[in-house]
View (spheres, rainbow, N blue to C red):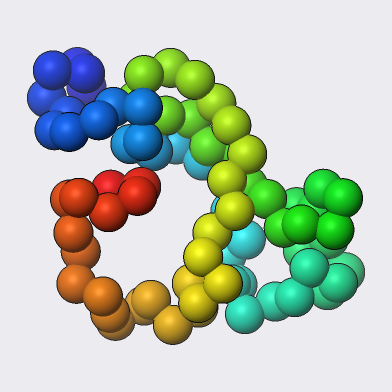
Length: 77
């Protein structure tokens, strides 16, 4: 993949990352606690411009399976 093929701001486009597969788990759940940093559930992401960073998914992520409709202008699209 070339950065020229990625539309929009490449600094916000996630290329690869790690996340909690079960978004309905709380940050106190022993199965997901390794994603925690100082009480926050964070995931490390690699962005299209080459930088990596901790990302906190929206609190309603477990409800996003069917909506909203995919939007290339969204935060991580």
